[in-house]
Image (cartoon, rainbow, N blue to C red):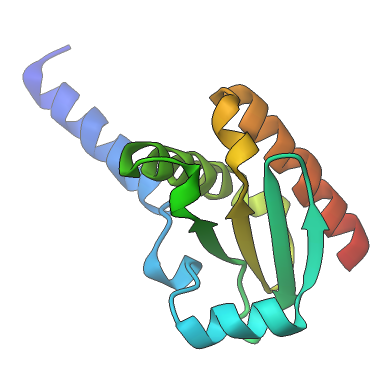
Length: 133
């Protein structure tokens, strides 16, 4: 491979992954949206997470993540948020409909590795999808 071919390959990969980004439009950002979810949303509890969800008018799945300071220091809180965002970014096509989902992280989630957390996210979100349909 020449240097020019490598550049073309790397550009092609960046363009390919660009459609799979987790943008601001995919996030719940307003306090009023979080309050609406907490008062009117349905709840589903798992060992490490509590999911609060409700349909929305934006035409897409939006994600909010809540991690309290009880969970740990900023490094641990940011790590769990990255894991959750990455799971939603990769698996976004599995979930149909326009929903707001707030994932509230429990302190028990900090004791598990990434694979276990992703498995629990998957199980809970499949339960949500069954209750929606």
